[in-house]
View 1 (cartoon, chains in turn purple, cyan):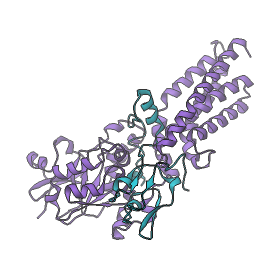
View 2 (tube, each protein chain N blue to C red; view 1 turned 120 degrees about the vertical axis):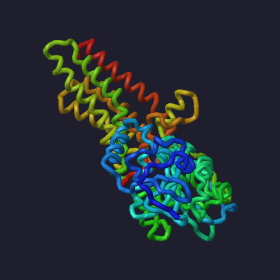
View 3 (cartoon, chains in turn green, red; view 1 turned 90 degrees about the vertical axis):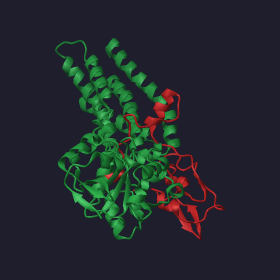
View 4 (cartoon, rainbow over the protein chains, first blue to last red; view 1 turned 90 degrees about the horizontal axis):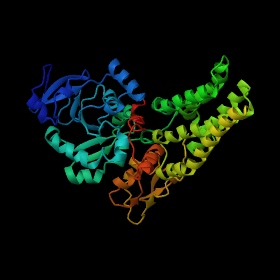
Length: 362
Length: 103
């Protein structure tokens, strides 16, 4: 018999539910605590607050992203009972938020694994959203004593880390692979747990690509600083015409970052070649040519800009392989190995042209 | 639009003799690489395989094998700098590309 309470939980009881610390549960998104079979279990809200959404925005921009986590353990949404479904999630807060906000009106248990604050798919690739962690978490939360059934619903993308046959052998629980996206859960439940091709497929549409762009921008500050420094040096000597000489170079060099981190993911499907580095270099070169024409740069300066912009935008684009949803390791390795020396050579040539142009006053 | 990359699915191998046709691979593959026909799985979309390893890990018959790894240039570069296998998750992509947070 379950009972919903609006009081502070008893520390000892909370520990029974698989939590080691109580402090970590005093969160605005914990609506209340319920007592079920003598155990106190936090009930998570299914509506995201402004604070939750703002937290996602900050994490998308990389701010304290590695610490954006929730405590692993057993949670409830709604008013679950013995027969209620168990959903398994990662302890990256954005993953947990995606799941709980997709369960409005559903009475369910959520088993949060310790994935070190990493999302389901990446954690599955590393093995922290894995067979061993899930078996351990089933045992430490005494899940078998909470629910009467023996079925766990896992996000499909967890399958690269979790072996359903091994979970069945090790715990008696049968793994059911839910949809890829949490927002499809209700439709999936309504369809009696049958997935269609869309629910099963990973996409990389414009909105998916742009959602992962901010962190790439946030990681590009060293390039922006280097661009400013180079442009300032290029404008020397520091006389009245310094700004006039520095400005076009600054625009060309600074523009490489949005070209490689925003325009590149936006245009990804339509850029030439399958190699990300080539797609990015193409965009960087186009940008340098555009700036050269728009500012009427001397040919040497424009050539230097092109030699710097193409490999830098290519490098930024290549780093996007990790945020994409369709790249494999042998392909990424090929890109890294084939592009290393051409990128270094091009940047060296660009710097040599810029310096040579200054020295010889071309 | 389905996107293709380089060298996709080259390490993916299916032992048709061992396959029991249960469809676990179809269920876990995020890129529709498999189809079941005549009681056996077939590879129908090797070009889309990103070698995540989900199929091999969940095949109850051990009929699938794939050399799983992250398709992340940053992880490969960090690994090369340290002289190790690809290392991911240090300020890189991880924590970001969560498709379940799309909506």
